[in-house]
Length: 429
Ligand code: AMP
Ligand code: GLY
Image (cartoon, rainbow, N blue to C red; front, side):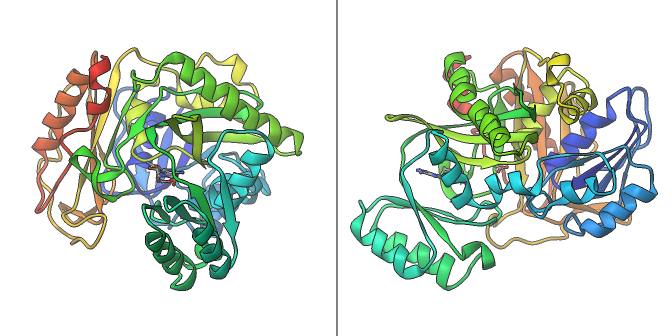
């Protein structure tokens, strides 16, 4: 089977790495990929090639898939899904894994997601949607000072402002709706009650009707140790989060994931792909903060190394609506994934810095590339999140130790990573 992976981050490297280990895979392509998403064939691993087609160029992607007999396309990032790449590929009979444009609005519009959750009784914080700055300012004036202000559309994880005061909330509305810091994504805002609690990410493979839940992961969104510093796309993750009891996971399935699938079917849609629920355990109980319509990054790098079942079999079962025919099995181990970032990330950072130590190899570990490019013989940095060092082990501590050994072997000017990935789960293993 010839498989195309769309995207260029650590998540896409992890997807390609896992897909290449399927006995059914003969060739993997990643586009636009990075310096790590290419390798020759070796025992039990299909070869992988990188192509320079941007992830938002749906037309060229479809032309490539059709002309190169691609049997399956797997979409990493949300952008192409929200733009309708699944419908677009399916129009010409190409098989592609992900939700349709209509359903991807669960991630593409926070107002849509909130309305969907309230209509269908899915637990989420009270909220309002404002379509003009005046409406937003009026709501802020009447409301408790603590609020979360969210740009409606896609903003690469940067469109959420957790505010302590009305001044901060007004400044957030100003940035989103007036200054249009996120462009069209700011034509509406969601104003949401601010919650307090522990966060968890529950991802599930979905076949339209059924969900197969993955090990619960925890992302570390702040740039620095102890959850300090600015929000980022994610500085590391671990799975499973043993501090989340099994009954909470069951509650997420019965109160969030399954009702979402059922309600979509009732409205004539169906969700085939990975559904990601971002959740918080609060004093008021379980709350859904957001939906994503794809794997998380870096959650994918912490989850996929634990998947024992052939990923192509799982995806196939989702595409034909028969997830019940596949036993999706997971390793009993723990995986820790540590992101190595460029100095300055998530703000300004330099690119083009040479990276050394990339051939470091340790047992049960893998170095996933993200913001890397090949310049002649040299691999250089080309993004804020540069690499993810992922390792599995029998305990969280063992996995973390290995992941940090791998991270320490890699060097580039100004490289930094959090030292505490996994520590919130440490008391429980
Ligand atoms: P989202 O993209 O909606 O998940 O928001 C990004 C981050 O903002 C979340 O991971 C939380 O840390 C925080 N956040 C979002 N909504 C809330 C809320 N209602 N209360 C407190 N924090 C929130
Ligand atoms: N790590 C958060 C996300 O992928 O949205």
